[in-house]
Length: 487
Image (tube, rainbow, N blue to C red):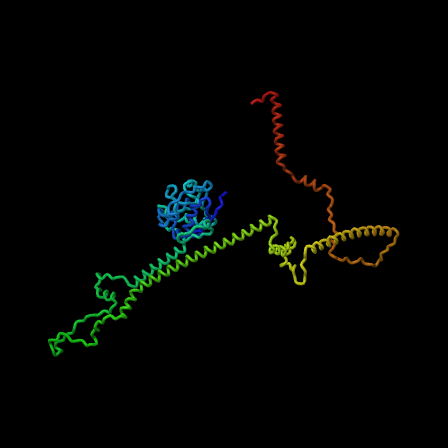
């Protein structure tokens, strides 16, 4: 018979749920390490890095290589070998080590078949229950390479604690906080990628002659194209003029000095990313603070519920102590006991079927046990009266027959010739005076059964065989004489 378990978790994987019960009393260190790492979210996102068909599936390494892992205690802890916990069937959960004793960390495995060779070498601390064992077998049937690594490794999504045998565990960081930090990191990474995408990547100006365009795009200033002056010496009065002066409208405006407003605007543009980072940091801190407050509230509500249960148990103990000592209970309990009258078995049965059978209708009183007993007594009296009247009727009938015989001898009849026999009235009470008679057995059926049916008794057959064996030996001894039988 398997030992009782204390503790239960559900491991949610990409292949389905795995329901595990823990032997926390027999292996407290291994179970405490497993529960603490699950509370911290250490196993979230960890893959099953090793699959040995018909033997085991292994996971628990954060690196996914099989060479990593860390324990909740900060260092490897010792083995816990129990003599009554053996690898006798599939679905057993045990700690994986580095090949030597007392090197347990975070890795564990689940057996796919009986494995007696593992007993005494690994700490067995749990078992898979229910139909979730088939999800483990599904993982064990996945495609693997030459190094026993799955081609498409399944992954642990999260671990849900159903029954925590160690309520005193204080995780270094909860799984919710860890997920919040992960979401914050992913959000920051997306923002950085979006900023880089907006700025755009630099072009390779060595391949194409777009150097002027690239510099103008990065500077954010409009591109100014320089054109050569059109010279027509034959159309101007002064042939020495080398160019036609441009109108004042087409000349570019002179550079202006930057004012105070422009400087403030540039300072605001430079400080905008810094303010955004500070705001993001404040939001992250607020999320972590909210999660911690929620965790503290849940812990306080759990402690309040436990305190109320303890108070109820103490009240029950005080009540039992008063009853044992012969003390009278409180007035409230006495009144409650008076108000609650004990019901008879008949009343309980009537209450069950009163709704369907219409026993409690308006204008009719509720039948109690006395009324039912009175009805039974009345029926018993009717039976007795009917039987007595039937016997008297039989006597009167016999006397009438005798009178009829006497009258017949004299040749006179008292009854009128033209009167009809009285009509029979069915009052539905004939069953009360009815008597059951059977024909007398003359032994014919018994003789027929003995003649037609053969009864075979194995004991008689064995006794007959033993008797025939004794007769045969007696005959053999008579032929050989009183001496020793020949061989």
